[in-house]
Length: 173
Image 1 (cartoon, rainbow, N blue to C red):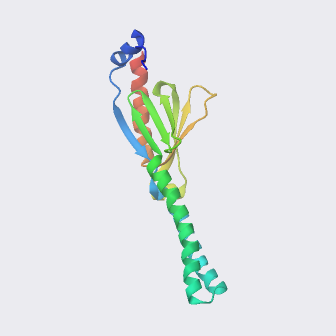
Image 2 (tube, rainbow, N blue to C red):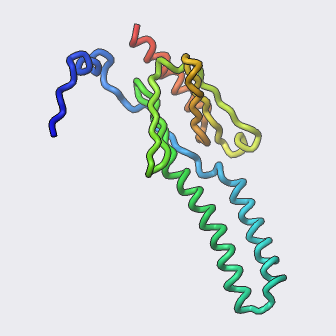
Image 3 (cartoon, rainbow, N blue to C red):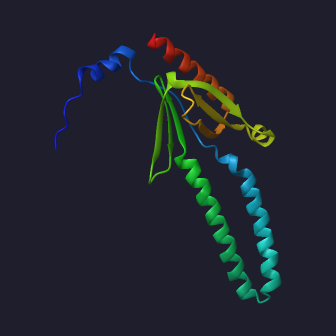
């Protein structure tokens, strides 16, 4: 199968704007799940005492506690792994990329000049953990805001993105 060559305007685009270079890369901070890990620890203690109460025999107690607690922790570690390894964000000189998942991969690309605002949102716990969410708002009011969740040093990332937007708009004029 052959693919037709791209038109000349598309071939001239990289030279007109310069090469697309990576400026920043970020991903979901695993520490954002510390509260849910604390809940899992509390649930493990409750499972221990609940199993002790309802299953008095030592042999069955061990199997019951191990099975239920293992299921809880497998689900929690799967949630953590999915977010930590598959939620990625990348900024280049022309686009902001947001990737989530493996199969299906949900990949979004936003042209920098279309971004109107970058906001950092975090609560007291997020500040204590050193994380926050970036809300990316667009000129087009019909397009919903993109959210980059649980970034480490979100204010630094927001500054880098704002600077890249400014330079991308200068390049267009």
